[in-house]
Length: 135
Image (cartoon, rainbow, N blue to C red; front, side):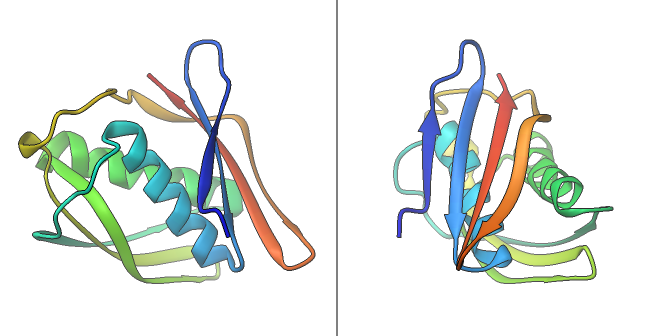
């Protein structure tokens, strides 16, 4: 199964991510955000554990992706993989693995995650999420 794909957008970055579970679609959204910043292989040298929550799936996804951007902006953290991701009662915990972003040539700087056109839906046995990143 394809993890994510980028869609046409006039000014920002828009993507859809896919997964068999809610956890997998959140993980693939994180990987798409990271790919928007840098589209090559990222070494696994730094680890962060994060915890956040939301009122619904969309706010949970928004807060999760904002945590990634916060780590990028404050700790120069560039995500390589997501491990031990758990979602329960609109709370998410995850172990993020990556490297110092200063070692990579960042292709796009992301200002923020937006709620514009955001959705998470389940059809049959597949989750799809859509996100627009303000650049």
